[in-house]
Length: 409
Length: 64
Image (cartoon, rainbow over all chains, first blue to last red; front, side, top):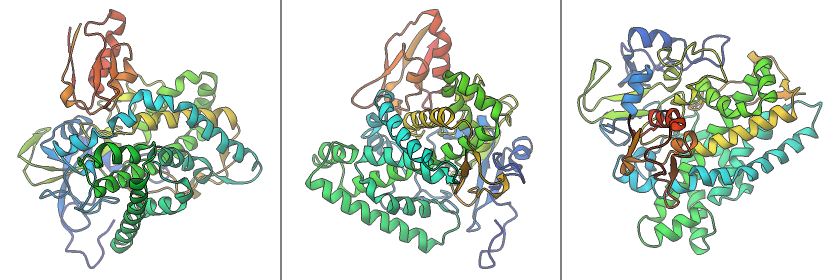
């Protein structure tokens, strides 16, 4: 993360650490442990040369994310947009980049779609999809199979497509575009191009649904919100983009990392096979342990606010290090160990915290529980087909994981 | 134990329903929290404290 020669003169502050320690692909950047002790709120420099605060302690991070005086509005002065990937520009930025009351109004239009009982009702369908993909994998026994392509990405992708009413036949297009939007290495032009292509695809899709709204989230947004004039066509497109992107790579990468972790930890895998009731808790611990959001969330202070003894001034940006919070020894005993029976695993902030906490978390939980349980049961002999140091980990992406995960059994 | 809610602040993350389903539910229309039992029996107290601790919008207040 050294600035390119064309960047402004490097500031004194270091860049946001993103690389895991050498040889420890599952661990957050080693720098976080030192920062938590020595400088829990420290200045970092962003790729455009501007500075922001980096928060690394669990307590400070919950305080920041739980306080709406820290704004999520990307158009606010001081919002640390630079170096953020996948973020929308000012137009149609989606409710995650807004503050109350607008955030509350828009989020509540879709909260019921992701509530616990509705998602639980989908469990048999998610199990059926998972079983079908596992059947297809079984037929490829003896070959190296990319688990990301064969299972980890298709499950959440099929489910969110089904929920939104986006034709899964178009999955290659929207998977490629969401991948570009979340990459840390593409150029600004490539990212804007992908954003425009996705917007244009979803604009055509929403237009078609306006003529014939189906029984799905986008159809309901059109008939219940757009037709009475609560929101516009462009708002529906923004909802579609947000939910499609959010529903894709997050769960997919958690599935890949979780599968790899359990392939390398036979003792834990055997225990989960023997006691499937432990899988719920194991999913919480895997969410804590992996903390795949490596580059945020981010906020802009709207007032002078003291956090953990440090004054953050109005107009200053804050980057919150979720992986650091989830490995804070003040909250999680022996935090670098994976303990599927950890009593407070669910206190993790892998889904964020505060009013913006992940809307799709109940769905993510069910998908992870079903897929991990099914993999353990059906492929007890599965193992990585290449040495772990040859697996391409996603330090180049806003969401951590594996680009590919070759497995055999 | 007595529980009060500030449902206006609820963001429908649903964690309380997962942790203490006998005490909390979600409204069908919008997923906002519903209190099923404001004074739950002792065997529910740990689950209720946990739900209050992880509620992302700090909606659940517990008086003991």
